[in-house]
Picture 1: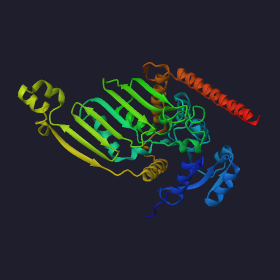
Picture 2: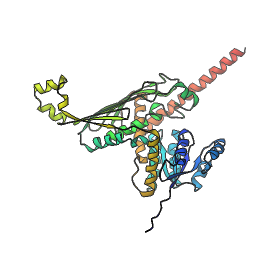
Picture 3: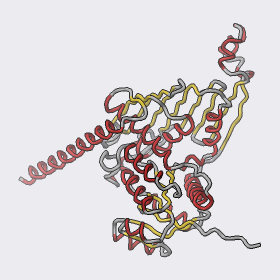
Picture 4: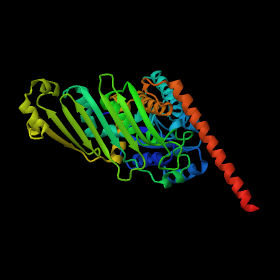
Length: 404
């Protein structure tokens, strides 16, 4: 009996910055089963020459259209700056290539929606977004518990994710970072999309958002570096989401309160699941005064729940490689991909709603008002350009004064 060997998926990488190079290295090192690195795109010709020496097995292009039409790949990983993800992803799909887009899927919900529509016209192609933390077994188990309903209805979610500390050198080394025009935002756009995705993946999309932000409060940037958002969900649950880039001692703590118990996750490594023997609504109407007193005074908690501890040491590299392997397997066998591209819209829409709420100081309902968000973002970009031009003129004036 003969077995047909499935050829590896040939990956091209569009954008050979930090993440693009890491993907190329992992693929070249054989860390992604069923996949190889065969082509790359970088608009800088000098970088292309250097990359050819580093990855001699791959073809490199300084023209994206040439990469897409060159026949050197089956799939494209779009790892360019955020704002180019939808445009480049859509181009890859229209060229007939399987497409995996880095997070976030884009800056605006409208642009991601257009990419989703292009993908819908080509159902034979695999289309995904790189939400690598969906590979963490803890979060996969939490999603099963919440979505499966075994612990009852969700009541409240609280996520404090302030482990995204970034010092000033981070921004000085790459001036495009933390700008409305080039990066599209701050912590919500570049660091916390992972948690925004996991939040809605586990709990479902909120229906209303009220968000407060501080812009450049602890760093010399124009975008948000401190976020506190209040969330309301269709089923009546509420939530709080807190993030920032200036907490060097950072906290990563997720709490999920349900009718049937509570789940607490620390550092994305350890989850404590406390499942009530009797759902809280039943306890509320059935316990007498003495039983209630024991619980309130702290003496009777051990008898009302069963505790399970889940532990997993997250490995950032491994999560990415597992996602790439999952995407390759989806192409080869048709198995569902863990992070379908269409789901990238939910995370971007949630972030857009938070921005719009903070900018306009009001509660925003979801689906987000896409036109209103784009107009507000355009105003921020214009103001940012004005600030830069003003600073440049001030420096020129100072230089002229010093030269007298």
